[in-house]
Image (cartoon, rainbow, N blue to C red; front, top):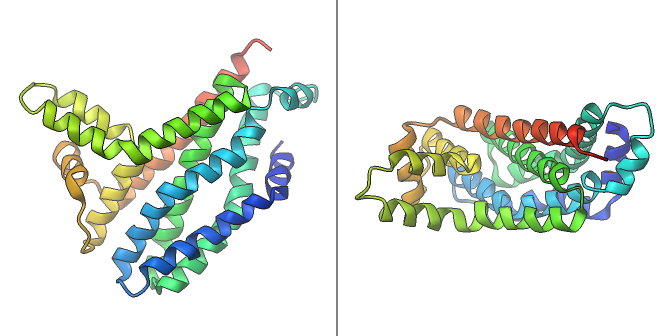
Length: 248
């Protein structure tokens, strides 16, 4: 299944957007220092990469008709779905990695290039995993895409203001555990704060960064990256388990 899904992703002309996205974002951070460029590019990818991943991956993974045909082949549903998700990931990673290298060159990152590559791959793993989970839960392209874009809006646009508002509202109540859970629900932000902390970049972490440091303690870049990748892998595995148990 992996070569088939890899080929299908590669045939989509919009996949080229993953190559163009990092260098275009990098142009806005040139000459601002290595740390600022790295964190700024990662923050830009948080806003622009997930919609591309959802739009390119979900229609393949959530296609009930295509799975009905593919599972006529001698393949176990659990492994077939994971192989399909892997094919989507590889198909998206192939143009993204050269784009990240080009973005790193435009920013003159030097040794921080590795962190940019790891950041991009970690973000891709997370959103491919979420795409796989939503696809397996719904097996209907439009509903999965709608829920995926809604989740993107919640995690990457509304998350910061909502968590800060929650912290302000709950400051007089013994609900610290609830707030900690809210912070852990978005591994992307946990990693961003850990990356800022490790680089000691002259960039304000904002109130969300303060809350993460206060509730979760010091989160290093490596720990945040591991949490981001593990969350994506766990979502993909849950999706494969759900897909294998569905009544088809």
